[in-house]
Every structure is written in structure tokens, then in C-alpha cells.
Length: 240
Image 1 (cartoon, rainbow, N blue to C red):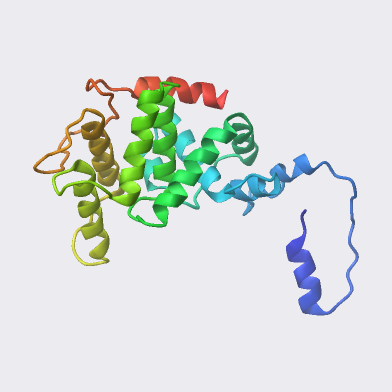
Image 2: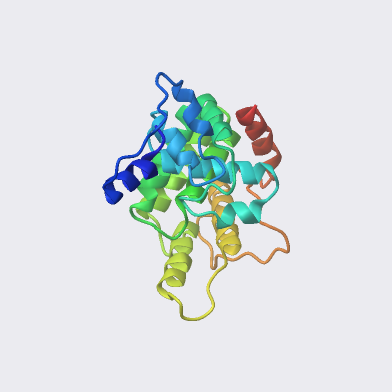
């Protein structure tokens, strides 16, 4: 499970080299190999047999940064970034929350196939957090699933629907390429959050999608109440 670079060097040098080989090593030791170098959390999850290991690791990394209050760092994380998280911690997180993280990863992948405006880490993490907010309430979970399904497909919405307006803002921004001022990752996250807030509160026809607050936009419930404290409590349980 380790030593690929050494073996490649032997092949390319066409020489014989002595090696010290250890057998019957506990597979659990893989998560601790090369953790100060290039071994990623996704590698650890892959060897452990988890499906969608890259997505799962990136979602775990996002949630860890969110829990630390480093939301800006979390939003800036790409789908393949783990941002200095410990591989063993990620695997423990997956062991405890695997079905929910796998579902969030699947949602992120299905959306990424159609909408590449936001990273899989961001989309999957928000699905996971909103599902924590639902906390087993099937009616709210249905709204969460409906929101992400509409975001993925764009089906059945008018040009004044907040999700349609979000699509258009992100699409136009992506089409700019390197030309002109672009939306920051933080502002994209704010727009996504504001879109959810409109949706859950049944404000399904608006003139403009915007956010002008001085602080980061916060996820709300159907009554307009901030639910991020509830989400953080759920995350604490997820990471224990």
C-alpha cells in the first residue's frame, strides 16, 4: 500500500535495489502514511472502500472549516481540496455519517454534471447541512430535496423564480471567463443562501436576486429564522 514511487524509480533506472518489505500490516495504517506530504483524505477513503471518495473528502473538509468558523476558507475550497485536514479524522467522520455523506456526494455529482457554477464541496455540504436542519422532518427534507432537484434540472420554474435567477447570475458570471469583474466565491455562496431562503419561505416570484448585507448570508427556515445554530449543533454530533 506504499512505495509506488520507489518501484517506479527501479523500473525507470533499470537497476536492482534492496528493499525492506513488511507483510501483514494492518490496512488501517494506510490513513497515517505520508500524511505530511501528498497522501490525501480522498486516498484514505478510497482504500477504505468508500464510494465517491473525492467528493466525500471535500465535503468533510468543507464542514470542518465551517465548524471552525472559517467559512471563507470553506467556500473557496474546490472539489478536490481538503485544506490541511487529518485523514484519520475524515475517515472517522465518514464511518459515523456515511449514508448521509454518500447521499450528499451523490447530489453534488448529479448537479455538477449539469451545473458547474459551484463546487461539489459547496453543494454537497449545503445539502448535508440542510438535511441536518430537517432533522428527520420529512416535510422539510422533501423541500430540501425539491430545492436541489430544481437547482439541478431548472425544470418547471418561471423567469422570476429565485432558482432561475440564481442560474442566470452564475451562468453569466461563468461565461465572462477572465473578462471583467467576477462574483467572488463568498458572494456566490450568499446568493445561493438567499435563494434557499426565498424558496423555503415560498417567495417564488421575485424581481431580482441580490444580497447587500455586511455579513455572510445565513440559512433560514420557513419562518425567516436563522437555523445555523441548529445546523452547528448537528455538526457537533456528526464530528463526535
